[in-house]
Length: 274
Image 1: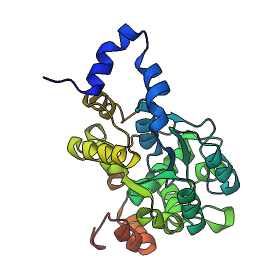
Image 2: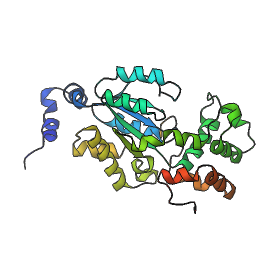
Image 3: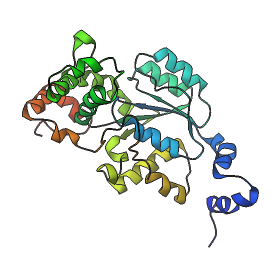
Image 4: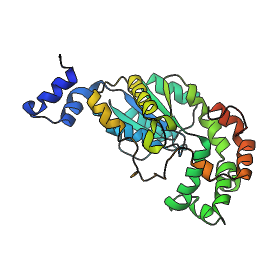
């Protein structure tokens, strides 16, 4: 049987005296695009970042995740991106930014998640994991997780805590933006996180197709089994549907009143009868 180019290369790397990493970095990654990996905060950004990390020849641009209030810094970092590098950010949509990315030939990935799971992840992260977060003391001083979850849903303008509704509105246009591939957290997580192997495989392939990255079957199989990564600093169970164990009827009604229409627009419910 005739060997593929990937099989031929893998068979001869030792003979050539190079490692797979050397090969991809020197000969292969120069074909890869520059990548803007954007997401709604607490949407499982580590999953998308992990997938790109595992992709041979792709590397992250040095520096912290760019946040919503750092748009000037973002533009500078985007212009500094090299071929095969990706930048991680939490940046709301604007037409100016969408055009800027298009004009500079940046491939954009947008990650989002069930908003009900976002608020659960948010309150737990701020309260129990990130003691340096500016809202940590505020959340910690609440009497119960119920109160913390309530704040994550409706926000508090007095301390600058955004509601989930505010965030969903600001990021929504990325889903249908030009030159952007939207990725659902639930589609990428795989069976270890409560998802599906088949859907995960299809999603990863769609990401690679969009980025015009060709991966051998052997490499693809190894990557897909390692995407779900529990050692991430922001990891917090990360399983699908955790909100079902946290929401009581009162919180369900509060969420429906606050963001029920947006839950439908994001494609997570068909109506308010949940």
